Length: 371
Image: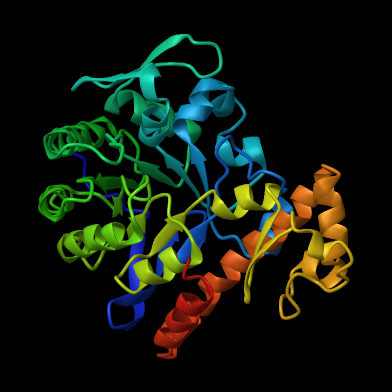
């Protein structure tokens, strides 16, 4: 069994209730938590340059093993000097193992204890992603945090199906640890669907292994928010306090504050970037849809209190014009604003935990984003 990574550490700085304010130390820099990680699936956060990400306060970004394995291939990236040099990002990077992406391929996938057999979404070619292969690919990519291969199950699924996925995820976790050959952080993943007993069982098994962090996967896949939070409530008591907790693929501003209130430290989600490209903006006063005609002559910024480049220089009328005209600049400006909103939200959450007013932030987000 692999020994814990020596170049990675988590430090708790402050707490309010179960909400935690901490720091994760990596060779590429310190990550202040709770943190939101912009999603750069294919070695790029869509519509953003690395310099722009740095300017708006991004600390760490996420890329994906499955997609980079398919194109351009991990050997191409390794030959270029690793993922950081390949994409021009100097900060920390987390790579998802590809389990969720393989799951999302639906009928193109067959899962056994050996691994995940799938057909490429690009050309239909056949591949197999095993725990050992997932670690091999990630070590060639060279991220700062690697993720175990897990089995993500759709909602709804039978309890028997999910129980088998929990068994397989635990088995794969041990194989991922055994395959790790570098002193590089590796996170285990808890599964269990919306069944509290299976979540607790998985959390205890994964937390008993020498991972640097523990993630909760398989949520926000179609279940109601109440079920997601019940699953978290069943999971988090079994995750060690001295390790960072990562909720994968979540979520809305309300999802984030509710999860922080339960002790989650790390988040990622495509929502701010995808919604930006679809003409939807997050603001302090709620969501704005640029599809609505009422913004055609609105010469106010999206958010008067926002200090992002978009809000300081452009109007809703202009952003709507770009959107309906399918101009690339619209996606860029909307993405800058949405990611700035998310990153500022996380900064406010961190400060509020330190200063003991997180409940006020949570109450405000509940009022504005309770939909």
